[in-house]
Amino acid sequence: MALDPETFDALIDTVRRFVAERLRPLEAEVEAADAIPDAVVAEMKDLGLFGLSIAEDYGGLGLTMVEECRVAIEMGRTTPAFRSTFGTNVGIGSQGLVMAGTPEQKAEWLPRIASGAIVTSFALTEPDVGSDSGSVKTRAVKDGDVYRLSGTKRYITNADKAQLFTVMARTGEEKGGRGVSAFLVPRDLPGISIGEPEKKMGQKGAKVADVHFDDVPVPAANRLGAEGEGFKIAMRVLDRGRLHISAVCVGVAERLIADSVAYAGSRNQFGQPIAAHQLIQGMIADMKTEALVARAMVMETAAAKDRGEDVVLESAAAKYFASEMVGRVADKAVQIYGGAGYIADYGIERLYRDVRLFRIYEGTSQIQQVIIARETMKRGG
Image (cartoon, rainbow, N blue to C red):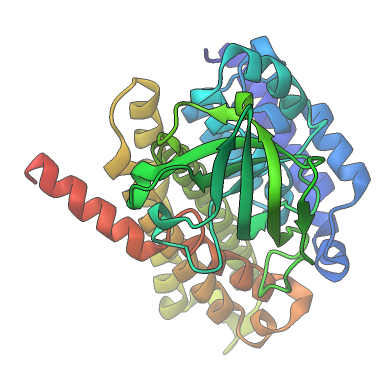
């Protein structure tokens, strides 16, 4: 259910000011420390950001997809690590439970997820399994009233602080996605260990790490859906997550454009601001046009999803275009800033590194191309 317009406008205004006045001044500190300050996390909880997509019945804000995307765009105007702090609770870490959980599972976990009392992670990728996500090797073997879970998951966002993992594991002998099931796995079960956070190119402050499961006894009551439905659940979760990430890409692009325009208006060369030079104007025009196209794609697809339409193709297309678009915008921003764009002081080189990940996680650009082509052929054009 959508918020009433006045309440939602107040939320957007609050998030916009939070980003501009609280988060942006901390960007260099987060980059240097590779950590989000605890005080900021507490403020995000107070704002309800951990529960954007969770129903009000469970303590969340219950935003529609359109509303969620508008919040994601606002959060995109600062370093993406801030959004990642609550991103798994809003998206891939909670939506399997939202979509396929039993009333008992939802009552147990969703209120704590929405409040930020616990952090969630989505555990699909493995050392030998990435884009071919139906080939997971982690196994869950039924043993009475538990499943014995064994395997390793890789590059798991927020694994260092997650208290609940949604884990995809093979329960049947069928090859491919039909043999995969989904499980809610609390971190405090015996046999779970977390690797050291990886050193990454960008998005400092957002941690990813391996998660190891060694004969972990997961209660059968923690299975999401029926056996063999895990892959379908994962794909539905990723459809929504891709749209959310697309909106974040739009926000980052709009931030880069605004910064580039301000710099081009103040930087003088050949006796005038570089904004007066047509080759600079050409780059700004390209940046703005692509960002507008991406925003239109995201918002139109979000509205279609809210109407209950099938948006598998459109979500993949939005993720593909928006993530590639923000990379091009970041590259042009560095070019407009020139040498200043290559050093750390202005933050442009940081965002240039940060946005590179958008073309990889929640489905690479190449996987989006496969989905777009497949769905286009299904529809006959």
